[in-house]
Length: 206
Image 1: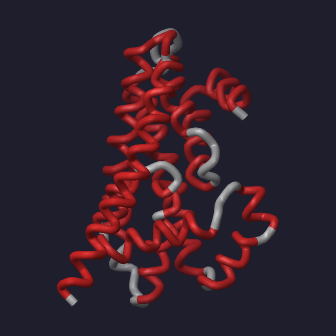
Image 2: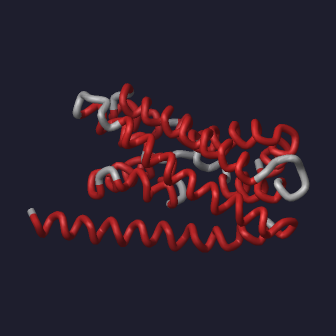
Image 3: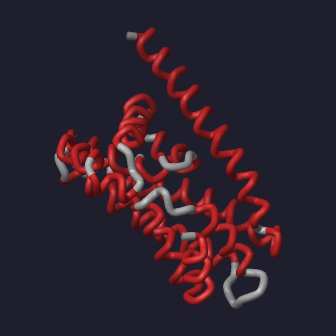
C-alpha cells in the first residue's frame, strides 16, 4: 500500500495528492500521514509547492468528508451498521465500533467535534457520518454549512502541519512517521479521556 501511495504521488503531483486524500477519507486505513509528509518532501525537489499541496489535500479532505456526510443523511443507521459488520466492512477496514465512537463524540460535544476530531486518527474521517445522521434527524440542511466550515478549518490545519513538517524534514521525512505513531496513541487516549469527562459533566447536570 505504501509503495503504491508514493508512486501515485510521484507520478501525478497535486492530482495524486487530491485523489489519495479523498480515498483516505473514505477508507481510513490508508495512511494519510505517509501521503502528507511525503507530499511535503516532494515540494523540496519537484515543481510542487507547499501552498498547492495543502490546497489539493484540503480539497480532497473536504470532498471525502462531504461524501460520508451524505451517506449519513441517506442510509438508514441500522442498515449501515449491518453493512460495516459484514464482509465489506472488513475489506474496507472500518469497524462498527469506530463509527459508534465518532457518533458518541458528536453527541457529547456537538459541532465542535467535527473540528477537533480532524486531529484524531480514524475518527477524523468517520465523524462525517454521524454529522450527516444528525442533519437527517432534524430534517434540515442548516448543519451543512457549519459542517463544511469546521471540516475545512480542521483539515487545513492538519494538512498544513504534516506537509510543512515533511518539507522541513526533507529526505528524512520518514522520521516524522515515528513521531506521528506516538501522537496517534496519545490522541486516541486523550480523546477517550476527554469524552468520558464531557459525559460525566453532562450526566451530572442532568
